[in-house]
Amino acid sequence: MRITMIGAGYVGLVSGVCFADFGHHVTCVDNVEEKVAALKAGTIPIYEPGLDELVKSNVKAGRLMFTTDLKAAVAEADVVFIAVGTPSRRGDGHADLSYVYAAAKDIAHAMTGFTVVVTKSTVPVGTGDEVERIIRSERPDAEFAVVSNPEFLREGAAIADFKRPDRIVIGSEDERASEVMREVYRPLYLNSAPLFFCDRRTSELIKYAGNAFLAMKITFINEMADLCEKVGADVQKVAKGIGMDKRIGDKFLHAGPGYGGSCFPKDTMALVKTAQDNDSPVRLIETTVAVNDTRKRAMARKVIAACGGSVRDKKIAVLGLTFKPNTDDMRDAPSLSIIQALQDNGALVHAYDPEGMEAARGMLPDVDLGDSPYDIAKGADALVLVTEWDEFRALDLRRLKPIMNAPVLVDLRNVYPADEVHRYGFEYHGVGR
Ligand SMILES: NC(=O)c1ccc[n+]([C@@H]2O[C@H](COP(=O)([O-])OP(=O)(O)OC[C@H]3O[C@@H](n4cnc5c(N)ncnc54)[C@H](O)[C@@H]3O)[C@@H](O)[C@H]2O)c1
Image (cartoon, rainbow, N blue to C red):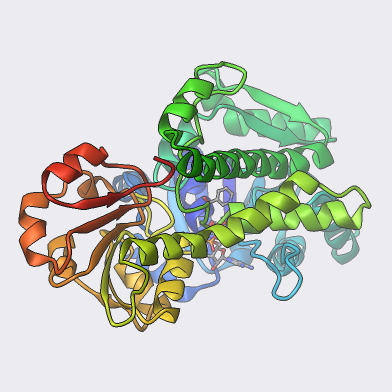
């Protein structure tokens, strides 16, 4: 199969390189010239474990190429995936589809022969219809079909998720296109990955319903954590106790500072908007969005309380800035709101992240970025663990205590057992324990 991927970001690059690794011939197109130049020179613009080697081996094997020339790449493709961004639209929270529609227009003018156009970007119900309408109106003569194939990979585990997915959802109403999609994913279903076919609108909604459900599950356990603190229960044991029930499951039941990242915040919001527009409000998700929004500043209040009621002119050392470990993605990371709230209250924030420092420099200009946890802890009045990178899981508390101004650990990810931290003379504040 000759596959062209429009957009070489977190999803387009990982999907493209994995398709190449299956043996397909893949061209990744991006309109940011520096990104394409970097990829051509063998530099990966994002941090994703294992991606570097996989790109190198597939480029070497001649199956993977990078270009800014959309026209040439689309002209020779059997299948064109749209994997451009769909951020929240400024002002109203709907998904901004301008990048998707611009790509559709460009594809229309470039395609030759029967072409399957696949939206891999997360798009609201009905977007496939509009993509089809755009292409048809630009190129009434073209032979094509528009398919929905939402992506479920998680940053930080993206390659494994792509290669061993729980399911592959394909929304197609064209038998010829469905056959092509079967061929695209054939190397995977030999491995018994379940291909799930449905109509295009259903497929588009599955993606939002899935993300909204997971966001709701996280928010549920976060509210239980707050209740645990009030009544003297332990949220980790509550999560374990309910998670052992197979109807509930034990995943996504870790209490913390609220969900963030490049997907859940924008996708829950977009679903709320779609539902309102269709006069069928999703109240559970509206509440999830509202509860999660207030949670991040509430985490800053937890830090303030741990510092005796004020952080004015105090040094707060923040460990972890990315929205989760094993990515450099800072989009909508909880750290951003927590740090802002601490600064609003007069704190001097110092921070360290294993991979997010470059992105952080642009987004957090008033934060002092250090070289290691020990570097930022010097003279600090509290150490706040925001993102649970592995390197923060076994901090040398014996070394930290004498260099800090006050031995206070606020563990927003419940990584440490309280009694162990107490043993080293630290005050410990977790979430829901
Ligand atoms: N990041 C994730 O974990 C994840 C997971 C599942 C689904 N998604 C969805 O996948 C989509 C892409 O997300 P992402 O995180 O990869 O975004 P991203 O911003 O990392 O990548 C998008 C890329 O598209 C490029 N682009 C935009 N318009 C273009 C055009 N006309 N021609 C060529 N290139 C163009 C941009 O330069 C950018 O490199 C979104 O809809 C997102 O919701 C993301």
